[in-house]
Length: 301
Image (cartoon, rainbow, N blue to C red; front, side, top):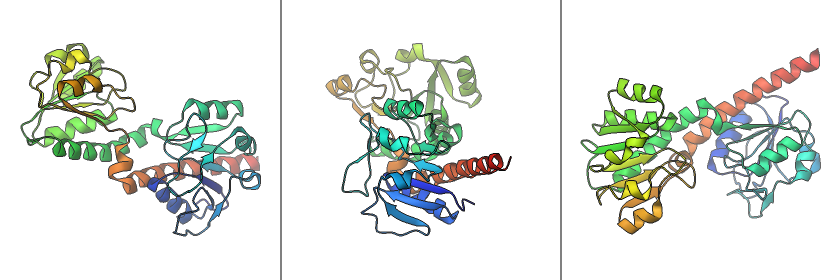
């Protein structure tokens, strides 16, 4: 339980609602900052401003999945006013207050570092990334079906990268009857691809594996699908880049060649915001309960 724990939410989207619900179920004291247009009410939750008296009593501060901009702006679909998280705000937080976010840009990282505040980036955790690979794969398959005129069964599919998303995607597409080839660099990853019954190839051999490609999925967040690679693809190839912005595809050249290519980061929050929110809610509340227990043990010594 989170009885007696003071938590503030600053901004966010539909995923944040699931985290608020979970904290409410666990009996936390909740302050909602940037939620003036939110119609629903939750037990133990009250709307508040980004004020000193609210910040000074917090055990945990929860920011949106995307954190802040490099100027400190916090996005919120529930607020009609801009929200800026500044240095003056972090100064008011207690020393043991933990800041949770999905990912953090340099602005937030440096702010927390200067003021010795613990920052937890949830999307860097293996458990969150693996759970998130499920809605990501479902969304990727949906987009592939929408943007091609062939079935996935029997399609020639190339996947780049065998990370959390790449592995889940390769397994799902293979089960659907696609002919799957997976590009990686690490010998262990190439061995795993072979063990999965798929066709492995080293990334430096990519140019030899795209001449009959129907769909290419990229999960590598650096430029790997260059103009030289795209030039070897059939015109009907569909490219879906699942890597974080700016992705790993030369979109300008793909467009010039008439090859359809889309960048689709953050699919969990787009195709399944409720599920994505539950994933974050379960992990962040577990971390807060562990933090609260540690703080109680420390204060009793």
